[in-house]
Image (cartoon, rainbow, N blue to C red; front, side, top):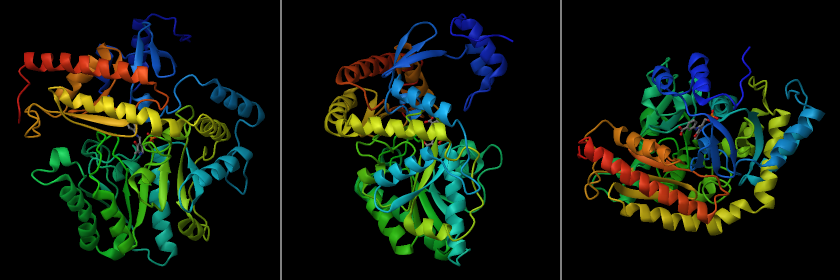
Length: 464
Ligand code: PXG
């Protein structure tokens, strides 16, 4: 057996990785010939790779390391819990203190009467719970025909068969038999790309009204729920026009459709408040959470459920659950993460200091010749790249060609800023300092300069 340590040369690690490790959302053969980047350790907002490069992680891992890397308190919480009770399940009329304490804490933090927590180990699992829970809710209410869940194209809700079906990623639907039946997609409120000549406000309202049209088209008695991210994350940080969410809320109220806010990215301070639904002014019946719940230090997710739905579900045996639902170590780490976020006033600090500063600096990016719009909510932002700002034009090349070139320049400049199609996105740890924001902006600007030179040299600076 090979003992794998960070002291092996990078090429050896890459070769072993290519030989045995299948990566998510990756063309394995391409990566094998190129070699994966090996991350060795991290502190604060900084990653160190196997070559000793210090990289500013403006994505907080995969939108999750809200508290920043290297918090020993979380490691100690895990060690304490592992020593005391490393595992026990929450099936068969059993419970334990970490699950009790975390559920109580989440009920306190979550708005309104979202007081009931069903644990999972990821956002995908939690959304699978939601599919079954909302359908069971309506069945128990004597309305078993209310099964359809309406979601959005270019939304992301996970990668399991159920949650991937809720998501509106066509590339995912094309593989492996998705979507499952009784899921219906409406268009996203992406004004930049799809708003045409409409004002953002009119467009936002029109896109929200697609929900009403869908409910009426499918039949009110067939629709169980609407699920959406308060701000789309993986779809490219698409910030809806202000008119969008109030109209969605009105429609859900009018037709008594359950509203599921997928807060896997927007939860735990990301948008400058504890939850994205507070930033967007919506009242969900269920929130999906994961990622920032433990700042990614342990795999944990959950559905936080309102009293009405929970009380109906409590009236039957809900035949659902995971071996690791309420895993004690994950719960203990999440509790400690929440304690730090609160004791150190991190969400307040984001709201009052970091967010205003990042917003000012991010807005400057709109002056870059490649950038059509620079949008941001809390600490999640995006840049729409365009060859023609006035027309909000797309590039003539396949979507993502230019974004990929710019992302490669970011990586070369030791900045993790991702691309989604031809949008560049950031979601840094909430603990990022003003000086680190300056570094982020400097590196982003430099990378876009280099990207612009490269796309011009390759003849790609052409509007569709
Ligand atoms: N809902 C939302 C809104 C998400 O962003 C999930 C559910 C699924 O969570 P799990 O824990 O099952 O992955 C997510 C996850 C990307 C990227 O490339 C985004 C996610 C996951 C992986 C990659 O932006 N979001």
